[in-house]
Length: 91
Image 1: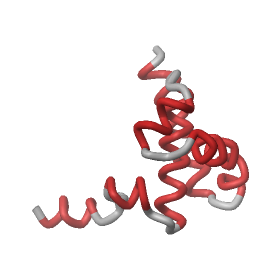
Image 2: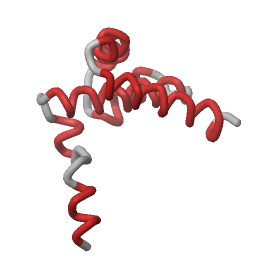
Image 3: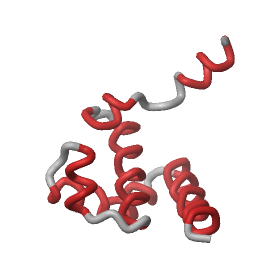
């Protein structure tokens, strides 16, 4: 139980992911949006699922490259997510 509790602290909770304004929450939301769009979800559907405007989704989607250039961890995580989508989900 202790290891589960410790590992959960490193994840962003759902409410914070959707509504949070801190850098980690925004980066996680940006990764989620880009992953959903790459899987074929439209920006309109993604916006509805995340309770955002389509313009907000578009802004975050378009900001991923700039965000990754300023964060090695974000760039690495984005690459890993992209690779998993390409190999495991799309096959």
